[in-house]
Length: 69
Image (tube, rainbow, N blue to C red; front, side):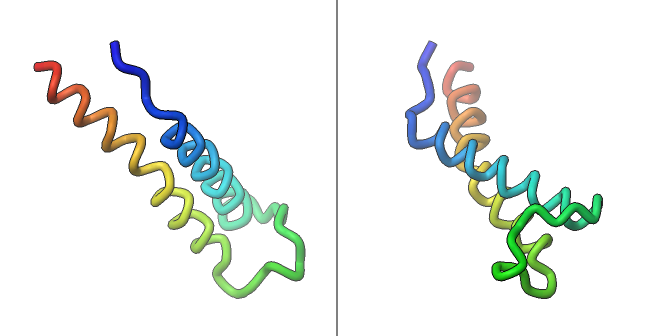
């Protein structure tokens, strides 16, 4: 069984944190980001960036699964 590279784990971790911050802000009205970094629609931007950072790990998993067949 092949293990994912550390860089994919780090990207997945950062993406998950950004995604969680964006979801908490957009849907839960919990502002965990400092006021100096906030701008209109930053919750949506955090969710998009988080999803983009999680995507390489998901693609790696799918490619590994297809190669095993």
